[in-house]
Length: 293
Image 1 (cartoon, rainbow, N blue to C red):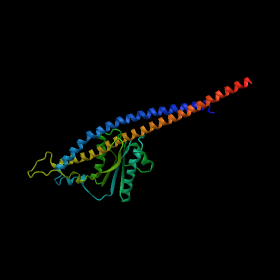
Image 2 (image 1 turned 30 degrees about the horizontal axis):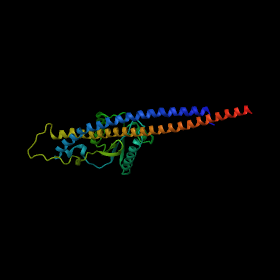
Image 3 (image 1 turned 120 degrees about the vertical axis):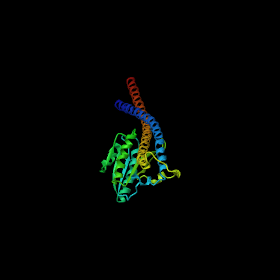
Image 4 (image 1 turned 60 degrees about the vertical axis):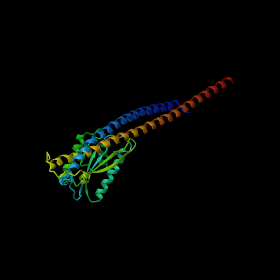
């Protein structure tokens, strides 16, 4: 027979589960609101990158663009891998999926005999690689939730400076591409060297001689680094939107599970109370009959 102690314990468990359900529900709603903001930031940043790309395409008919240091192709011996993870957990398989792509990239480059410098964005990625004994060349924390253009500029300048000084021969950006609230795809993008094919298709310049102010080489020196920064910023924004979407789904699943657990515990508690009441009635009836006899 279930006792009062067991019923009290079930009541405490039900209360605890329902409190957890309220928390996960609140986190789900917060993540849903942040998805919309992250999507808006992705859309607002897109015209800037597209216009830079179009201007460079207009200049790309000249050989000047191919001489830029960030477009120089050389034998790959040292590679940088930038891994974009989150600072917070409770996002389902978001970090696990991106880390799988990062690990695969690291294995491929090291199997080819290249030295790899690891750059990590987010506490989760930093903790993951530190636990496995892989030291990161640089770690950025506290920017994954709401990345700013200044963060993208700092990251891009770090890698571009080393590439220009021939300390790096290739750079990968591993991030999560946001397709929809239900679909996010971990992917990698070759950040450096910038491919000249990315600027193909620009309209041919007229035969007349144009005077650029500033000159064409100076324009490219300004625009191509901004183009790389825009690509990094794009990866950060896509990852932020993906993180919020993954957290929303994870918290919705946790809320549904908590509701089911609370329902099961309530059913068990009701059965225990019914058994207790039935036992007490049986004892009273038995006592009454004994007194009558």
